Amino acid sequence: MELQMKVAQAVHVLNHDSQSCNRVAANQWLVQFQQTDAAWEVATSILTSNYHQQFVSDFEVEFFAAQILKRKIQNEGSYLQMGAKDALLNALLLAAKKFCLGPPQLLTQICLALSALMLHAVEHGQPIEKLFCSLQSLENHDEGTIAVLEMLTVLPEVVEDQNTDHRTSSAQRREYGREEQLLSHTSVVLEFLHRQSDKSFDSSIQLQGRHRKILRCLLSWVRAGCFSEIPPSSLAGHPLLSFVFNSLQVSSSFDLAIEVLTELVSRHECIPQVLLCKVGFLRDILLLPALNSGDETVISGLACFLSEIGHAAPSLIAEASPEAFVLTDALLSCVSFPSEDWEIADSTLQFWCSLASFILGLDVDSGENAKSVKVLFFPVFSALLDALLLRSQVSFYLHAYVVHIISLFCLYLFPSHKLLYWPLFSLTSMWICWILQ
Image (cartoon, rainbow, N blue to C red):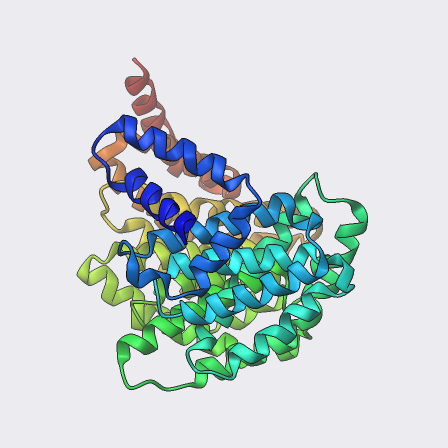
C-alpha cells in the first residue's frame, strides 16, 4: 500500500505540479519504478482494488497503471510463467468490467494490455481462442458488452502490430496470424455486432454512443479483412451493411460510417455496384441539404466516399448508366461548393483521373464504343472544367494547376473539341506563368 501511495503521489506531481524540477524528478522515479518486478503487482492492485476512492480524480493513476502493464507485457510478457499470465488475465478482465463505464481512454489501455498478454501466451496454443472464451463471461453482463466491444476493436490492431513487428519470430506469427486465428472468429464477431446494433436504449445519447462503438469495432475488423470469406451475394445483403448505411443519416455516427463504407468499397469488388444504386438517395437526403446549409463535414465526407466508389470501379461509371451520372453530378456539386480551401475538390481528383484513364484505355479495344463513351462524358468533364475555372476566379493563386490538369484531360479525351478548349488552356497557362513570376 505504501508503494501504491508513492506511485499516486508521483503521478499527481508529474501531471499537476507547477515546478518543472519536481515534474522531472517524478518522471524519473516513475520510469525507474516501471522497470522493477514490483510494478506488476502494484499496477494490478491499482486496477482491481477500490483504490480510486482514496486518491486523485480523473482516473489518472489507474490510467498510468494500465500503461505500465501494457508496456511490461509487451517487453517482458514472454518471460512470465503460465500461472502468472492466467492471474494477470483474470485481473485485466476484472478491470475491464470494472471500468467499462469509466473514461474510454482507460478502458482502451486495459484492452490493449489484455490483447498483448494473450498474444504472448503462445503456450496456450490458441491464444486468441482462449481470449474469446474469456470474453463470453463479460458479454453476459449488459455493461460488460462495452468492454467486449472495446476489446474486439483493439484486438485486430494489436495482431497487425505483432505481425509487422520485426522482433516477432516467424513461429509466433504462425501462432497468432490474423488470417488463421483472428479471422476464424469473424462469424462470431459479426453476429455479436449485429445483436448489439439491434438493441434499443432508453436514452438517445446512449444509443448514439453504442452505435459509434459498434462502428469503430466493425471498422477495425473490416481493415483486418473480416468480409474476405463471405460470398459477394451475401455481403451485399448483410444486415451490418444496412446498419452502416443507415448510420450515415445520424450526425453523431456519420464520420465513422463514411470510414467503414470507404474501407468496404476499396476492399470488395461487389460493394461499389451495391452502393452506386443508393447514391441518388444519399444525394437527395444528405448532400443537397448539406450544400444548402453549408455543412462542409457532410459534403467533404460524401465527396470522399463517392469518389472512392468511382475510383474503385471506373468501368462501372463508364457504362454511363443513370446511376453513374447521378454520382458524377453529385461530385460536380461537391467540386463547385464554395469552400474556403480546395480540400473538397482535391478529394475528387483521383476519381476524375481514374475515370479519364479508363476512357482513354477504351481506344485500344473498343473502337466505336470508345467514341460513344467519350461523347457521353464530354458534358461531365466540361462541367468539371467550368466548375474549377469558376473556383479559380476566387482563389486561382492556390490551385490554378488543377485547372491546367483538367484542361489537358479535355484535350486528350476530346480531340475533336481542341479548338474549344485551346483558349482555356492558354488562359490557365498564362495564370500559372503570372503566379510563378
